[in-house]
Length: 250
Ligand code: PGA
Image (cartoon, rainbow, N blue to C red; front, top):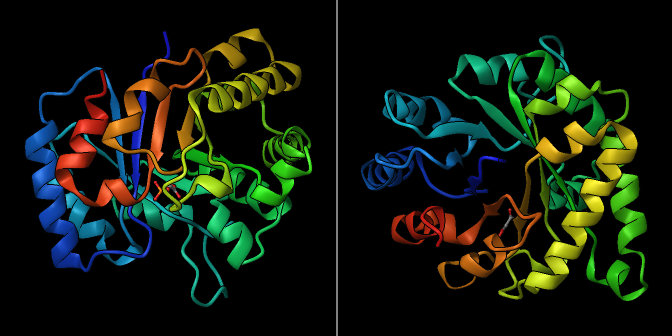
């Protein structure tokens, strides 16, 4: 019912030449996949060259961030319109590395989501608790605050272009994945939040991805969970063979 999404977050990796080489491998390895939505997110400088290579392929392109203004005196920033112009179909917003390192607030993330949707781009909206928050039993409170804050003021029909990524911060880049049960529990809670904020149809249709040390070895178990509709993959998305295997989960 929900089309799975596998997205690769390349983070701060790959020169333009390296990004093109990886893209060429992915396009060859995934050309026949039609039942999964595949998205890759290189660094800004590689977006346009990678977009050229993706023409005619089923892979979609995402940026890793944006600024919530169309144009103007915002030195160093990039707007959703510019990203669309560079060939993107989506933007990752609210990644925990940006929340932590760049102190992005739920309010800023909400503005970014609105501007990105207004530019007719999809959003991959990231949420997730830290280890400290989980140990203090605050996971559900944190998820509630992040979901409500990030999606504030959105109409149900706008949610068709929003993909949520649940990424427990303690599982990102640590090799420590949430168990299938821990992930399913969080995903089902998030879907319940969507039901409260919007309606049953919106909650049922929204794709919720899991992220945090997803690898070929654990993707199948995660994808077997009822409320896990895909993965946001960091480290393993940098290797063509690993990412292709993750896309072709069983
Ligand atoms: P990881 O990163 O797969 O390397 O843990 C996931 C992410 O941060 O999106």
